[in-house]
Image (cartoon, rainbow, N blue to C red; front, top):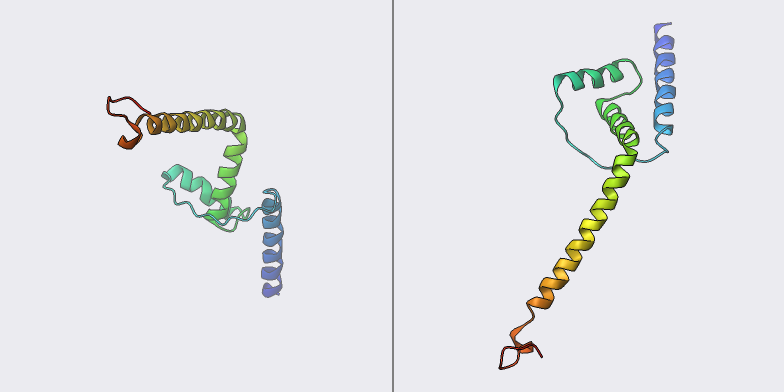
Length: 114
């Protein structure tokens, strides 16, 4: 009898786990990120695991990161625009520097560019 209860408990746990992974759009988590967290945040992550909602700290932390990014979606959209502008300016700057530092062969005898 106890073995049956244990199997049933594992099945329920797997079903709950499927709910959380389905919510993430079936995306694979292939990237590893190591983070340091304070004691309070670690306790919250452990509570998610202990509640049976997630089977590991990794799954719970991935969920929290995903939810945080969703909650700050507008900030990330604005930030992406600014990063794009910064990249464009860097490209312009590189082109300007490259133009200004052409090889000596392209400079004439009187010091002017040819």
